[in-house]
Image (cartoon, rainbow, N blue to C red; front, side):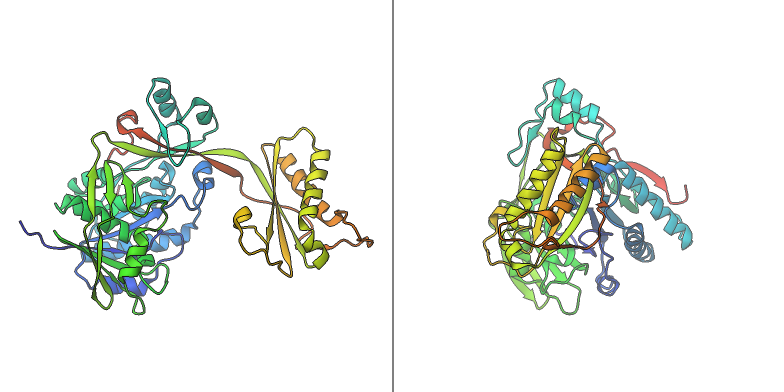
Length: 455
């Protein structure tokens, strides 16, 4: 049976991370859309927001994007789906987004509509019991299987949902869905799977739309793209007047953020893209055929967990003296040695990042040409706040006092952007990057819930 094509707009590759551009979004609304969908979370922001249960994005930006989408959703009668609410998809973030949706509805006096949501947070004790019962919680990307010792360092855990909770909420008549932590592509794939389109094409639709205009060229962030799915292909079209979706831009995005370019793993199976074919259908549109879905009998889901490392302070020193720059390793070694002598019991981490040499690539830096000036970012971390501050201050001051051969002056060869060290956000680490059988999570995780916009 031939089905009417289904059209989805993706207005922002990470809702709230930077405000959505409204002009291309409004252009997309002219395309007889079936769904408005945006992903709002990412591991790219690091483990801090999950561990501290905060947002990496300002509330005003999140509100702006939700308001833009909700007003269009209700005006045009198009369902709206948001995945991984509030950057991390934690329970607090889901509740925050649900409250903002209701606040926007009241502010604009919108007719009553139905809100669906689900939570993805998993109690640490639930995972601990699974490990104690012998459930294999397997590490990803070279991590060992999960142990109780790692859970002892973990503050918060979320499970990454697939398409199922979105489909369930759509079946229950939800007009707006706010999802907990979710696979980026599954949020977009869910309506297509529900409509009966092939799963391979549906998940590819999600893969290409997840980052919005990142699949188009030239680069322009936070612009809308429209994806259309049929029984045989996916078409993706750029909405910004100066952007095009080309075979190169679309294919390159399918390889984005992955060690293996042909596979996307989600709950329930794998999207396999090695046989994909890309065709320039029109000036701004590329057609994709050939993705395949490889189902998995035993459904596992990814767990993301974050643990507190310590309080963090940061100092900054600038270096322009050629002699000091040539011996910057000696300067950093001197600072580390002075800290170690002053705090011999340890209990801290000290990191010095020489921006202008190899602060980003570290030992993988291939350009060894000395810069004419360096910025040393000194970062001290410790469970004890006072120790973290003292370690950072000691190291920052000691790069000024570093003793180098042939230096006879007393003024030092570095300058300070500010004399004090500044307290930064606490340091967290990724403790969990594992998969677990979905049956071990309990009934509350991913459970669909419905409420009225006026409740």
